[in-house]
Image (tube, rainbow, N blue to C red; front, side, top):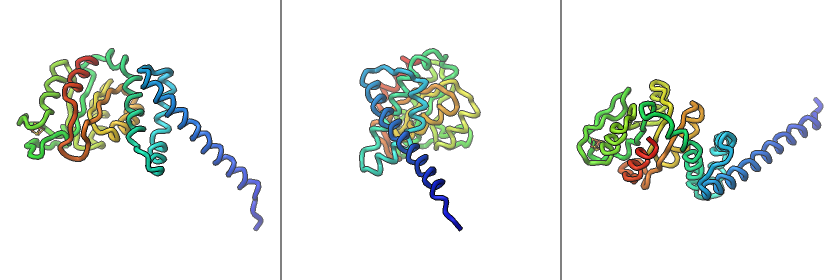
Length: 217
Ligand code: SF4
């Protein structure tokens, strides 16, 4: 059996061209993303967001592989989306918005219950900042606030509630993946990363969340 070296060579050239193109796109994405965040202004959001949808996961893998801090990539991804969506988010009425809070914000001795349809149901014991944030969101007319037990729950709620905008508090990693998710569903988003992440007893700047809920109502 003869080997078609010409065909194998062609495949090699195509693969190399795709890798070079992806590398160039990643470099452009990181550089432009950084500069836009620095200047507080996003240019061509209709191109930048799909570009980041495409490059975020490969970039994260490369940063991991090189031993760099992948948080930098997640920060650019989240901030870029905040910038891109800022005006649209303000224009959407609060009643079409949903707030997602992470369950890891709860106190260790939390007495909340778990519902498969409603998520974690807070009993307002006052041991964590969740009730204060929920109260603010409802007072400005948010459709619903969910304390999320996991990412599959978020997807289910988006399909059920069909919000036009989502405000989310979570770790940078979850917010970045959430950014890809809302792009997929065509939803506008605003996100605040946790100050201290982890699986339990995480922390967020409560004043920042409340101020932004009001500013972007
Ligand atoms: S305030 Fe709610 S969520 Fe927070 S610890 Fe108490 S019951 Fe749990």
